[in-house]
Image (spheres, one colour):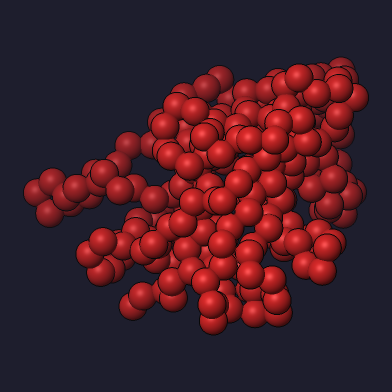
Length: 233
C-alpha cells in the first residue's frame, strides 16, 4: 500500500476527479485505488504513515544541526521546502556504500512521542543502479523473476534494507544508534511528504539525535522536522 497526500485537490461538481498517469517507460500494476477524505482542525496538516495511520502536523520544529560524514553543516539544505536538498556525499570515497544524514532536535519537557516529517524522493541514480543490477542477469532475468514470484522466500527479505534502498531511521540512545524503522521507496519523479511516529518515552536526553541512512546517493532529502504535539481528532 502507498499513501499520498493530495493537498491541492478540490471537488468539481461534487466529485473529486483524479487522473493516474505513467510518466516513465515501465510497466505499472495498480491493484487498488481509493480516496480517503479526512476532516481535521484548521492550521493542521494530515499525513498517513506507511501503515495507513493518520497523524496531524501542528508545530513542526526544524533541527538544531544537520551534518553528514563529509559535511559538518547541512542545515541550510533541509530546513525549508525548496530547491535545496541533501543528495548524499558526492565528494566521498567511491567505495562508500551508504550515506548518513545526522540531525539533532531540541526536546521539550514531558514529551513521550514525536513525529518525524520529511519531504524527500529517491534519486534517478537508484533507478539506474537497480537497472544495471538486473541487466547482469542477461537472458536469464525472466527465469529468475518467475522463481521469485513462485517462492516468496527465495530472496532474502532484508535484502532491500541491506542495500540501503529504503531510508532507515536510527535514534541515538545511551551513545549508541538504535534502529527505529524505515521509509518506503518513493521513486524519483516527485518529492513526497512522509511521516513516521517515534516512541521516545524511554529516551532520557534533553535532545533527540537521529540518523537517516541509505545507499550512497539513493535518496534526496529536501526537508526534515519533528512535531511533538499529540495527534488531534
